[in-house]
Amino acid sequence: MQFNNLIVHIENRVGVITINRPKKLNALNKDTILELHHSIKSLDADNDIRVVIITGSGDKAFVAGADISEFSDFDVQQAAQLSREGQVMLFDFIENLSTPVIAAINGFALGGGLELAMAAHFRVASVNARMGLPEVSLGVIPGYGGTQRLAQLVGKGRALEMIMTAQMIDATKAEHWGLVNAVIPEEELLPYCFSLAEKIKQNGPLSISAAIKAVNANFKEGICGYDVEISEFAKCFGTDDFKEGTYAFLEKRKAKFTGQ
Ligand code: COA
Image 1 (cartoon, rainbow, N blue to C red):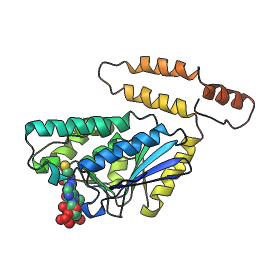
Image 2 (cartoon, protein in one colour):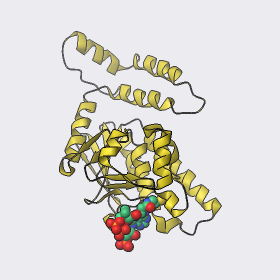
Image 3 (cartoon, rainbow, N blue to C red):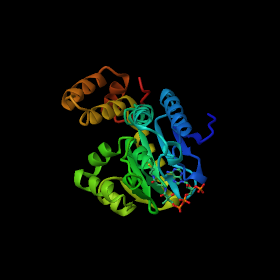
Image 4 (cartoon, protein in one colour):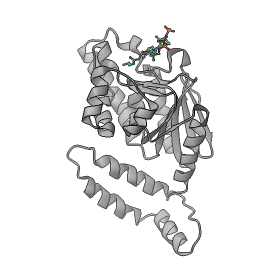
């Protein structure tokens, strides 16, 4: 896959997307958002890919935000369109993807960068990572789901503190607050994410997709997560993966899941 703003490579059934605008600290312009959508869609459509890792190029930033130069003279309508299109095309799209997505936060994750990381299924940070939603320092609020997902992840009080002060938190605090699952030395960040991907790959891919749907249902207005869990749980029983997983256990062998 060839992109102008991304490097995409596949290793051991894991798709790694590196956002590659280091001179702009990997800020998300319109083209990058579109390319992220297309690259993630095509990795998700490939049955061979079991996990997607998103990271940033260089040693300074994961993503330093939405590209401020692109929206500084937008009016109210254009702003609504930017926010809505971005949420649908990228942030909600990632959150609801059937393939697990890990954000490897290798430096600044600010504004749209933190929102991107929060749309992933979970996050791992390098020790030098710094995270924040500094939009109010620009006279605006987060527009790519940040007000919702930050509060879900760290709680309302901590989310409002981060948003209202526009201050960054370091990786240790982010781990303490539950924003990232682990903090890893810079050079070990990707190997660590690969080791997590290895563990995920051992398990039934259809059941992993079902788990994503069921967990996400908890955060969807008007949807009963318990009902979604019942239906996803039941659907697993109709898959070859379920038969393989249970027979393998009973036969004391390692399951070989096909994703069927
Ligand atoms: N949008 C557009 N360009 C950005 C950017 C963004 N969100 N974040 C960084 N850049 C650009 C800078 O304009 C600069 O470009 P230039 O060299 O052409 O002037 C380049 O990336 C390097 O950034 P710089 O500010 O010089 O690096 P720094 O190490 O001094 O500071 C940050 C790093 C992350 C603290 C600082 O870049 C910053 O505050 N960025 C904006 C963060 C933000 O508000 N994000 C939310 C956007 S909604």
